[in-house]
Image 1 (cartoon, one colour):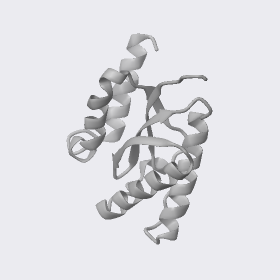
Image 2 (cartoon, helix red, strand yellow; image 1 turned 180 degrees about the vertical axis):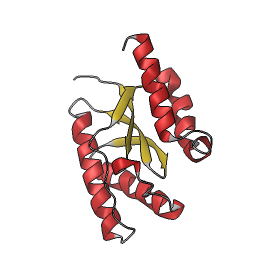
Image 3 (tube, helix red, strand yellow; image 1 turned 30 degrees about the vertical axis):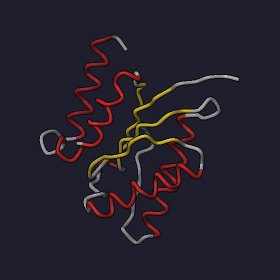
Length: 141
């Protein structure tokens, strides 16, 4: 039997980074729905969070799962559900960002996802993304 341990921190934003998730109640309802839907599809989400214009997922990939397929499924279903709930239109960017997480960094990433609202009072998603991409470019990745 194959063994696979892939822990992924995945982030995607709303279309044009529009603040479509401004209402905290709707945002938390969305996270709850994403968790339930993911569980029904065999997708293990460890943590979920975000802010008004993006979502963070910490997930564990199984050997038969594709990150691209997981993102496609969750984005499509969550957008459909959000609209059905009459919370408003919800469109996601086509792209997503994902990075592997070492098991010894799990608690740090969980804490980071938990504190998204507080974090983004100081730094916008766009500023954070540009900073991170700059760090990756400087490191040669």
